[in-house]
Length: 467
Image (cartoon, rainbow, N blue to C red):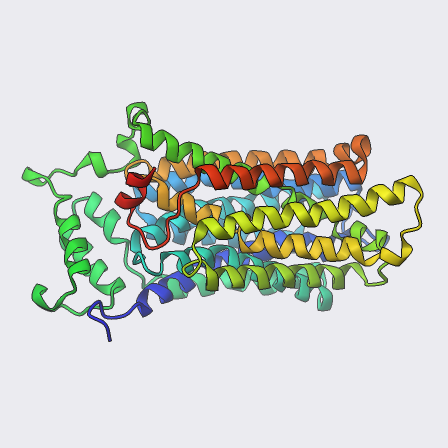
């Protein structure tokens, strides 16, 4: 065992906290199979089959819930701590699933999706903060990507369960994950940095020792890196027992904290990454999976097509966990953005030739291959790594506030993209819409190449110094 005692407790914490993300991922994937049942003539809703307009509201309302959850749980994370903020997410997550089987009209489903979406807003805001504050620099990348990996696993889980069970049974099955999450995560300590910020220095040291898997040994037996981490925690305490608000909570954050040049640059980089995460169009195009497969002449049932697509994303995200601390964040983001643009260009070209009346039947594999390639490359970088990078480049004092702001932008763009997608396809055609997304993906590659720093294995201080 290394002098730092190993990383197993950090992996255990990352896996435990992301159980709630599996449940949220299933919430994202639930409409795929469930809408087929709810919009059929045998719909269990008292108001009859779910209309296309209702489906749009039910599907997109999860993003509005995410926006609300971003503000609520980020505020809680600074008031009651990262751990307890995360534990409280189990409540809206559970309620969102329980309401679905009892839904009798579209409004009930919209409410359920909003409540469940609030938990997702907390997941994508607080979990990156939690991981950034407990992880060693050497494995921070792997632990950070667990968030999207488990979310995609949840999506595939919902697709598979939807193939075998009805929409209500899927809800009951996945709702059990809320209890599993609480049972596993309950025993994890608060992050060392948050404990130090609230002047609980002794508890912060115990927490750091736990996450570094070190028993209470004399300091001389610790590695130099862990000694440095312990010293940083102890210097947070001010004379007279006051908390250092310069390194402190969101309540002490002012506009002046964003005035420093490198802080502004970090915020702008985060804004760019979060914006391109949605503007590349991958998330919005997922809603057109069945249309793309049908356009290509595929005979696969929509539920099977969804499982295939979900599995491709899962494989891509798993590849990201393997490569993120080997190749680095920047190269994966760059390759991902270019790959997304190429995949979309292939899809757009096929669709354009089809509109012009060319015989493209022999190339019907092109849109499926392009779509699959796009999703695979997106999962490797642009859909998975922005959440990790923004948690790494933000100064500790403004981290919670900055991530809350950036995630709010993400939920707003996501909501608009999903709702406006039908208008784009109607006015520009499918080929024009896909070409528009391709141009934005190539723009993302240029932005990443010029502005995004490499953060692999670096401390926050080193990252800020490189900006």
